Image (tube, rainbow, N blue to C red; front, side, top):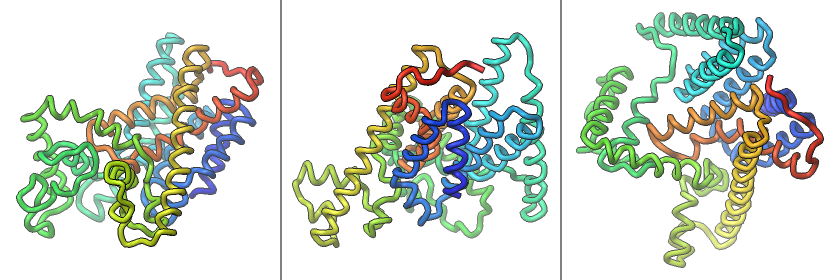
Length: 346
């Protein structure tokens, strides 16, 4: 999956920028440490981002067959994770933008939606034949909504909501189907939001911080320290100056290796974030946006919006961060080779 992803990132960047930028994108992807950890933990992120990026790539080819494939891959991504709806929203908004600019309805989107519809039908009928329900999308949305809307909410993942006496507690989980559990979580979340609308809205910045404030998606696991939270480790070291409490059950060498690798990883992460922000500013200022960059930015925007509605956690930003690497690479290339390429709106 990672090798194919490298190829797709290269091809997307080549399509919307240049070969120099595409090479930089590959280097940024390779040196992003969290990808190594995801390869070991086998989270859905790797498959999800491959489906999303390949859908974008086939869309940018703008051939009838490629647009159908783009829709099919989008359907596959929606089946893996609900965050894929962000890409569908991005396609819809891009269609509106292009339609407004050209004053005509582009027929290319018909092929995209056809591919999506075909996947939904095939996958929905397949799940119906096995589980008795036409289901074509990931059903984790309700539980994520509850994680971001309960009395113990922090903005990030907090499993106490599922403990006895809490909003998400289910006495006999084996007696309920996944559909019933989803309905239970959704009803509990919506009830809490109705009772605390202002508090729920004010939680959005916290969810954003929990997602983008630090980047220990899984490096702690990779280094053998389990679910150690790097943000909490740094907080304990700064406020209490206690290394043993911050990283218990590990020797001094392990502590130093952990802190060094996490420090380097976060330095890389923050530098890339800065490059992304500066690149976006530059693209808008110089009116260099093209179809590919607009689509990536729309996908990122709607993905972040979905996080703000549900719950924030560092892992959820991985697809956003990977899709924005070409944007960061553009800025890096521009700073060293300013004016070598020109981007025109398609």
